[in-house]
Amino acid sequence: MTVAIEMGLTTAGAGAAMDLEELLATRLLVQGNSGSGKSHLLRRLLEQSAPWVQQAIIDPEGDFVTLAERFGHLVIDAEDHTERGLQVAGERARLHRVSTVLNLEGLDAENQMRRAAAFLGGMFDVERDHWYPMLVVVDEAQLFAPAVAGEVSDEARKLSLGAMTNLMCRGRKRGLAGIIATQRLAKLAKNVAAEASNFLMGRTFLDIDMARAADLLGMERRQAEAFRDLERGQFMALGPALSRRPLRLNIGPTETSPRNSTPRLMPLPEATLEDARAVILAAPPPDASRPQRRPAPDLLEQLRAAKAAAPEISTEEVEEPVSAAELAERRERVDRTLRAVLAAPDAGFRAIGVLYQEFVVRCRIEGLGASVPDLTEFRRMLTHARAGLGTDIAGDDSWREVTLRASILPDDMQGVFMMLARAAKEGWPCPGDIAIARAYGSHSLRRAQRLLGYMEEQGLIVVQLDGGGRRIVTLVELAWATAPGDPNGDDQPAEQMPSAASA
Image: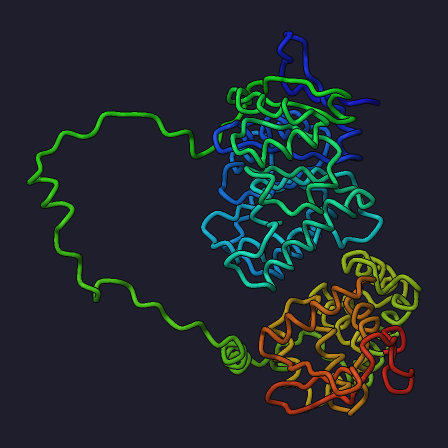
């Protein structure tokens, strides 16, 4: 079935439709100076296609958050989340097929680039089973894929440019259709712009931008002057999803509007010069009235204090006391059931909720009844199993500090940290990226590398390379260090690093 998106009218008064399925396969580039109507065009496209396809909008100015009330988009305020949190949010948005608006308003340029790259990376790295069609709209794309280095760090620029390149160059096979809008083509990285096959060119005045727009539309250079004559909301269209020949069209109205409307002229307030002087040049308030910024809390100390304050559960509160032998027998049956669940070849890559459902069913078949662990306890057991820790090791006193430090990390990272900790404690070679990715439940080696970087940022580990390029991981404060290991290698030998299925 062909889905036609009504974008507006041609200069002849005919309807101007965009083929949504063709757009998903060929991507779109929108260009126009400030005030040409780019954001209005994107809003029209998003509103018309919202019932048909999942959407994600990278919104540097917060213009598109108003889509939430009318069309149900989830607004994510990037300022309130870490890069890791946004990466996971991008993954989950694709898994659950939720349309989102990443609001980057309030962040400086470098943090906008880093957080947008993390969110795009999360959507890009999901497993093949979740490659559903999705429109990814990036407004002011020159901020995230600049043609030349600016004031931001090289690292932030490379991260952002890499994410944008993946979106436009490799995103199609993953169901991601990039729609990028920019004020100036000359400021946009050419390898990003070149991947679009559909173009909507609005009003522009600089010769270099007019020349590039004319080249993209297959127009002669002398015809480039026409871009100066376009009205607000008028665009020249070309591409397989739009028109096989350059076509001028007027973008239709939208149902929603941006929070920040175009400024209107209004009369100045009536006030005497002396009144204005008294207000503007009044003495500033004392600095002491400003709230003092408190230092960031020490999460590890908070966790230690919380654990020390936790009440002990006395055996007198147990309504039906059982013998130590019975407890050991139940624990063995639960462990045996968990090993059976993890014995499946794809168990390492299945969602925790799915694994827990299978675990509960097997426990009931075993007749464990009330002894079935809840989801929280199951997560802890799964974390130890994926780290290759048996019950004897996980219960060792020397692991209390490791468990405490691991609790700082998100649940899905704790197993990886414990796997590294065990290798360091035993002096085994550092696990390779394949082993780390498998313990995390992913096929992505890049994600494994990012995990190590995140743990290092949290001050939990130090990653080093020796002269042969082999990796060494040292646990901060505990002073445990792994032996050098090949980052490109697979799991360590079975006798050194037990698999999750044998934990």
